[in-house]
Amino acid sequence: LIATSLFVFGQKKAMVCDPAKEKNYKCLTKQNETGGYGAVIDKKGAVSLSEIDKKMKKENLTEVPNILVKGKVKEVCQKKGCWMMMETADGNTMRVRFKDYEFFVPKDCAGKTAVIEGIAFNDVTSVAELKHYAEDANRPKEEIEKITQPEKKPAFEAEGVIIYE
Image (cartoon, rainbow, N blue to C red; front, top):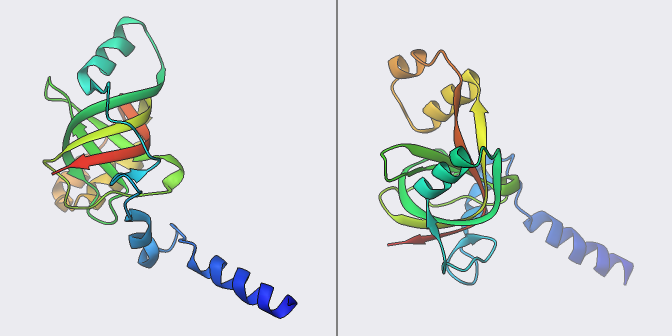
């Protein structure tokens, strides 16, 4: 009985994905039961990214928790799908990362519409992080070298994502 228990629990542990090991990342991109990624979310009542940005500026907020947002995916991490940039109506972008690095999105979802739920917040991204993101996006070396200043702008930590064709 003990040997069987150890074998069963050992097998379950071996099947758990480890986001630190890049070769295992595909198991993190599996869709949840509603066709989304991460936590199951409801797409009803989503607001635009521009509304969040305006609300944060108008009310001088540092974060907006538990918000449902809809927008166009402009760019996705081409290494793993571990972040995406969403486009606002005014042409700006907002970086979306995924809560606790627990899930990723498909690398080919740029240009599609997404609904995300989580926390919008003001973020300062260091030069090192910006260069890392540029490398993930397969930017040319010359463009990466031009990054010399940190970037302050709204960002988002998503608990769940739905992507539409």
